[in-house]
Length: 120
Image (cartoon, rainbow, N blue to C red; front, side, top):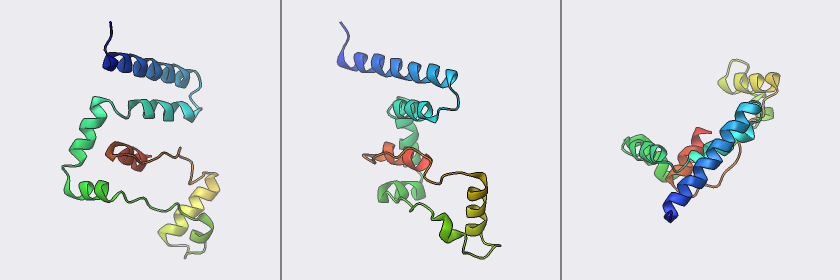
């Protein structure tokens, strides 16, 4: 008989494996990347990585404050001087057809989810 923890690990493993197979089959479908990332969120490796990040004073402060920068307004940035970073960024994004709100949104519930959101 499996314990609750073993059942959770088994379920998580199956979901991770499914996401990996789907990603292999459809490498351009980024939903599978996000699904895989979401499933790996609370692995021991992720938890240890976040704990290590919190030992870095400036990163620890950022995690504690939970600062989230606003999404860039491409049209506003295109009004900046042409030699500015803002203009250069916006120009590149627009010419490339990228969406600055490209990444899957997620709810920040704890330190791990905050770090994951920031890494996205």
